[in-house]
Each structure stands twice: as C-alpha cells, then as structure tokens.
Amino acid sequence: MTGPINLLELEDLARAKLAQNAFDYYVSGAHDEITLRNNRSAFDRIEFLYRVLVDVSERSMATTVLGHEISMPVVLAPTAFHRMACPDGELATARAASNAKTLMILSSLSNTRVEEVCVAGDGPVFFQQYIYKDRGATKALMERAHAAGAEALVITVDAPKLGSRERDVRNRFHLPEGLSVENMVAEGYGEVAAPPNDSGLSAYFASLIDPSFSWKDLDWLRSVTPLPIVLKGLVREDDAKRAADSGVEGIVVSNHGGRQLDTSIATIDALPGVVDAVDGRVEVYMDGGVRRGTDVLKAIAYGARAVLIGRPILWGLAYDGEAGATLALELLRAEIDLAMTLAGTPTLADVTRDLVR
Image 1 (spheres, one colour):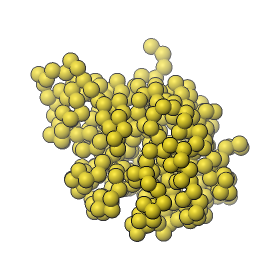
Image 2 (cartoon, rainbow, N blue to C red; image 1 turned 120 degrees about the vertical axis):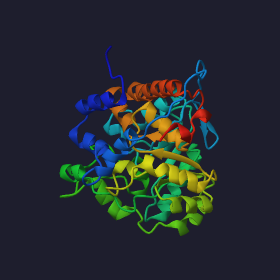
Image 3 (spheres, rainbow, N blue to C red; image 1 turned 180 degrees about the horizontal axis):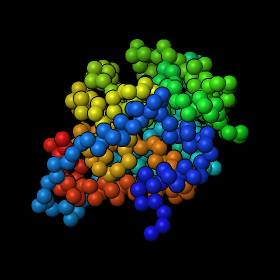
Image 4 (tube, rainbow, N blue to C red; image 1 turned 180 degrees about the vertical axis):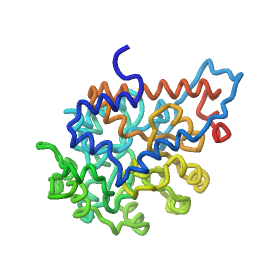
C-alpha cells in the first residue's frame, strides 16, 4: 500500500514538502510547547469501557452543527495561510470539506477572500473573526462574510496578543512574496512582513488586534451581525456559563492548539467541566490534539457535539492539495467508524460518558 494510512504519517509527508518557514509556523506551539504535547497525550490517558454484544451491523456518525447537517462529527478548524501549503489554498480546503460533507470554518487570516471561499464548495462555511482595533474594519469584514454566505461567526477570544511561538521568532516568520491577509487588503492590513528579531504575525497582532475586547463588547457584536455567534478559546467553567448567559450559540473548548499560553490545560481535560457548566444551553465543540478516530469518540463521550481539526488539513494540503485534505478527512472517518463498531456504539447518541474513564 502506498501513501499515508493515518494522520501522523500524513504530517511526516507534509514536512518533506513544506518550506521550513511554513512547516514551523503550522506545527509550532508556544514557548516550551508543553500544552501542544499535552493536548495530544491527554487523549492517551483516557480509557474506553467498551460495550459488547451490540448490533453494530449498521452505523451512523451523522450529526448537526447549529442546524447544519454534516456526515461526521468533524469540522475543519480555522487555520491561517493555506496557500503556504498549496497554490489553491483555502479553495482546496473548502472543496475538501464539501467532498466530506462537512463544514469549514474559514480563518479571517486566510490567503483567499471570503467571497471566493464561500462559493468554492457546496457545504456550509463559518467565518472566524479576530477583533481589530479598527472596529470599522472589523464590522466591514463581518458584513462581507455575511453577504458572502457565511452561516455563523466564530470569534476567537484567547488571543488578545499572540503567544510566543519561538520557532517563528527564530525564522522571523513572514508571508512569502505574493501572499497576504487577503480579507484585510482593502483595509490596508494585508501585509505580514518580517521584522527584526520577531515573528511577523506577532508584530501584526501587537499593532492591529484589540486587546481591550471583553464581555461587554458582545452586545456590540450582536448589534453589527445577525449571524449566530460561536466563541472559540474557552477552557473555564465560569467563562462557559457566562458565554451561555450572554446568548451565544456555541462554544469551542480550545487553547489555540497550544499556541497561546503554554502549560494551559489540555482541551479534552477541560471539556467535561465546560459541558456540565452550560447544561445544554449552547452547543459545545472542542479542538486540540485530535489525530485518531478514538480521540473523536472520547470527545463525543465527554459531551462535544463535534471536534475541530486544523493541522491535519494543512498536512493534507501540502501532501496533495484538495485530494490530500480530503484524504485526511476520510482517514479520520474510517477510524471513527471502526471505533464506534468496536465500542458497541452504532450511533453518536450511544456514545455516552460512561464509555470513558
């Protein structure tokens, strides 16, 4: 058999194809990368108490996210700068999501305009938004996303400043010639250059992203968009309760892939407390470290409606563009199906918390 048979092998193949500046940007975590590693290793500590003598001859992993039907509980996380991985960039990603009958969350830091991405496939697209100091530019971009057909806004709340990703500092990370933050070019905020002794993206955040954005600003968000709002980057139960109280429609339990505050709690460890805290009032998703179908099943058992995967899609793009990203999703789908079969859970409704410890 040729080609990768799991997402870990896909990463190894992508490493060989990507420029060092790009691979380090995609793969890196903050500081000592402890949270980056713990996101993954935390799954290994969770054990299944699987069921036997269950009829698993027919299985379904279909679910919904904010009412949108998807074929499996896996959503494409917002990740930046896909054209560093392949020429079609986010267009290839959108088509891969469509091929897999799931949804894509487009990063506002994409190399492709939201208007192009929303029509590249036939599946739903959510739009991830950072809040710029220039609130007029922020509002204009949210309005563009809505007009383009985005079905929800995903507001990243764990990045008032960029975490120190030391690989990027060492590389003086910058976008290659010809690439930009395409959605913000019209506002004059499209360039990510290489400053001396720093990451270009870190400098971009420090100069442009609003660190004063807080709970009181959710009313402003509601006033400028009719779209459902999902908050991405929560790990605390009290923050989750406050988010539910505020009327948002969803929460992503996330530590930004281990790229912000190092030694933060692993997201799978934070998930059950957040789920209990919101008590069904909002949909809860999680990301961070998901590489196996068993990881997905564990997240569902702890109460996630779906998981988000980020880096594996980038590895797929680097490996073989749209086909590679589609392969990443299908490899994961096959593993979820096998895990459901062996755990005695023919539907996601059967994946209950007593399945794990």
